[in-house]
Length: 303
Image (tube, rainbow, N blue to C red; front, side, top):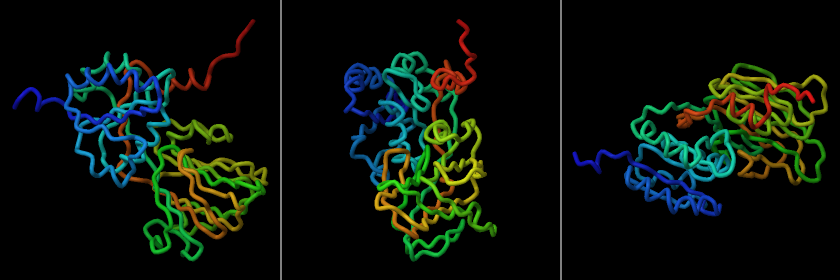
């Protein structure tokens, strides 16, 4: 076997619309080309989940651009099962943990597969029209499915214009006979543990360690003092039926993909397989990032 044939196969996913990424790629790509076999460099703006099946097999996908780019590419490559490594530009990211310098520093362990990794579970999100039967795990009325997607962070039902409260029926583990809970408010967030530090946290939901596979259901300004966030096992199905909707009511996937919703439609969320495998930066930990980005557990300043 030749030396070239033994090199790891690499996919480069670069957000070239970001000027720092385009500039850094000019020097980083030749450096990577000496150490890998670059098998694909798809356009990240045009890539979609359906088209990702045409990308050649690879041992690693390097994503350059930051957490937003990581979220989008994770959805596109979710069925491929290859590890992803995020390179950020300008600030520390929860998902894009490496700087270009850190990538070079740890390249040997990344290339030989000894660099630590973590698996992050993702969610399947489906929207069913008003004629669909009530959703249950393993029994979905796919003839009435109008949209299907995946999410790494969250799926958010938001009331939208004209910003009146919407009425929802929320059922957790409906296949086990649970009754729906009536909810009036501005919406509901269903997040993964990875997404617990995003919109979920801003809405008062808990931080969940990324090593814990769980959904978190957090209400948005609901008309109740008793509705608090709840953490649910990943095997559970979560069904939200819109009893009423505004003209702007929508489902938002990872803050990037928007699907218009109408009254009596259902949103069904369940675990997606396979999980996303992320290559971790050995120099930092999740809790260190949490302290730096969110000021978690930072003591008060004393003047």
